[in-house]
Image (cartoon, rainbow, N blue to C red; front, side, top):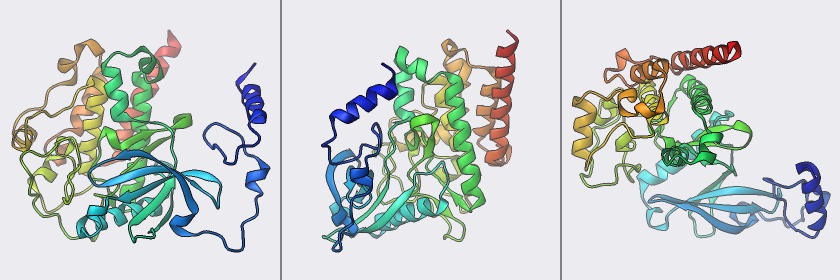
Length: 342
């Protein structure tokens, strides 16, 4: 029995189900045509069946059901102890509004911004079923055969090309992400790729970045609460220095950092604390991907692209996301041509 008929049979067996599983099932008229009552629920009251998806130091994400539209959504809210923190409130509102206004296929659609009955901020967005690039790379490092079959190198490069396209759009709108890392790249169904977490985005006209004050023993893989800089292990040199002028080339460095991990399954920077990481970032030469991971048979063309994006002097990097994307596309085209000739 093929997948279509199997799902149809399963759907018929579950005709009494009250909700729509938008990820795996078919629509039912009993749900899509249901009357919206005169006294309909609005705001946070219309969401039910909350299930915790993830929880960080700043916010919590839930899966829940929107009764009015009959769909699963993601509900994001700040931790209660941060409800009076002006920096985190600003970051939270910025993430919701920037993501909503970018309205690009590479950003997750935002549905609603509001406050719940206790006055806590929340926003809802599309429920994307997929995996983040950080988890994919970690699994690839274990040589898991299923993940290797699902995400060979050319697929990972296609994902990065989509990220470049998204950033080319956001940069054209005057928005710089500033916290690019594999954990903020989400790949969903049917090859869709999303750049998420825009809470640290820089918008043209925003006051210049002040020199960051970094806690020596903080977790260097996480975006710190209450700060205006990104994740220490993924910062561009100019962010680590606290340069007053930050432009799109900081994101180019982030793309190079992600490409390094795609090629090697290892992080570019290592250190026990912030001091060691900043020293390595600013004053030590970066390793060659092919020297770090010779077992991965890294193509020379991709290593060249990676190292150009990782130039410490931003004048020597790719100057735009489009130019880096063009080189990645040329590599992909050359690869396909080579395969077709074999």
